[in-house]
Image 1 (cartoon, one colour):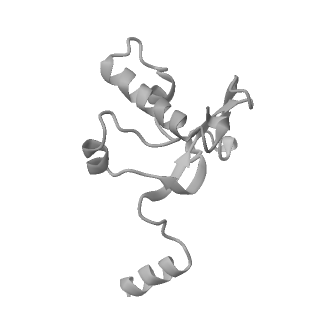
Image 2 (image 1 turned 180 degrees about the horizontal axis):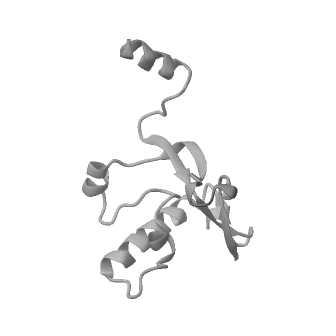
Length: 120
């Protein structure tokens, strides 16, 4: 029976394709078209407080732990990562590893800027 449920889920698109997974993102950094920081916006249902799961993205890029370990040093998830990686906030004295993760994340944005200039 589980095999039939799996096939049905694939047919109706309940399962993301390989390399992607469903992710919930709670916060978004908001910038204007020129890249100027405008603030942070809570995603999902803010009325739920700490129980707010955030906004569900059905096809978010995802790397497994083995892929992250075997990838380039300090490999990171694209567009959705921890606050400390994206902004270095919450780290009193960023060490070399923290800075490398932050730079890798920023480099991912630079790489796609040709296709999505708003990410530059």
